[in-house]
Length: 81
Image 1 (tube, rainbow, N blue to C red):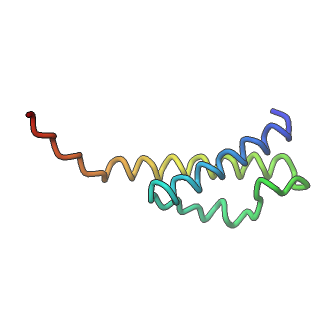
Image 2: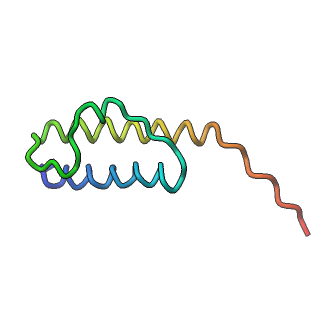
């Protein structure tokens, strides 16, 4: 994958992270990603750093959503009319 494409994927994952936190109320705690200090707009960062950041962010989003689904209470059954 070219660096420009990788940065685009990084931007998309950052948008997914914001959506999870703001719209779904799912906390995405990503200390490894945060400690890297590589954001999608850091176009001068090395491709390898963006790649590592993308993997950390994707893994963290996956874990947060998996935990959210596992702890989600089932919706109450709708009464038949």
